[in-house]
Length: 241
Image 1 (spheres, rainbow, N blue to C red):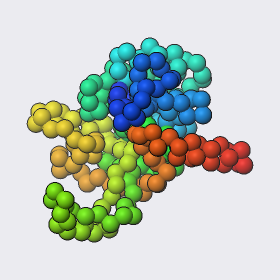
Image 2: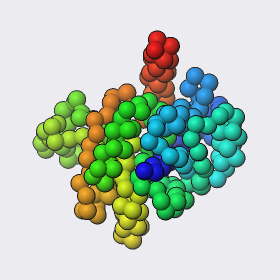
Image 3: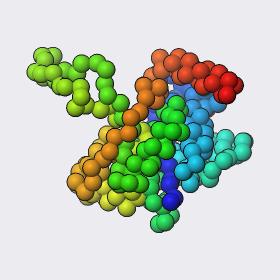
Image 4: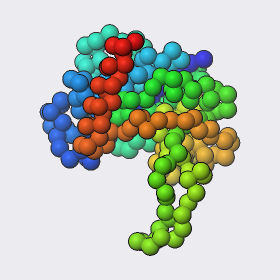
């Protein structure tokens, strides 16, 4: 079974609110340093360590591709890592990466480039679930009470047992994801994640694999403090084992 991982990393990271010192002139969160290495490299490493993964494809802005290529070449790689030019949106970036995959790929996993704390066991579970049923996402049940509102007035309370906060990776059969993107393009539909595109096809039920509150998406400056804590814990665990 061939499993390709797509990491959309063409975002501008505007919520970080400052320029990244790691690459002059940009404010891309995926390039910010975490223990001396860009977040993107930490994320790539998690999928390189996953036995089921065949290749990794990173979708980037054109102006970042040469810099990232040199970055990847500066250390040995455990899995093939390719770069493709991304688009102006996440959806366009993932679609560009999809178009670059070989026809014999079985499953495609899409993962946020700025979620470096996904663990390999969860990746494997999502891959195995998608292999069995066609589509699987990682998600967690919210701990807070969720209110439905109109303007600033509460119109109801949504039962938490019926809710899941979607994370990544999201894994799908290659042909299914291709059809989902083609249908979205035909309809002019833009989704907030890949699962929302697949759901529109109404061809498979998307399974949910339990995730973790450690699988954070680094989107704002305060997330970096938590990321440093998690990275230190991972380092201690590796040394202890």
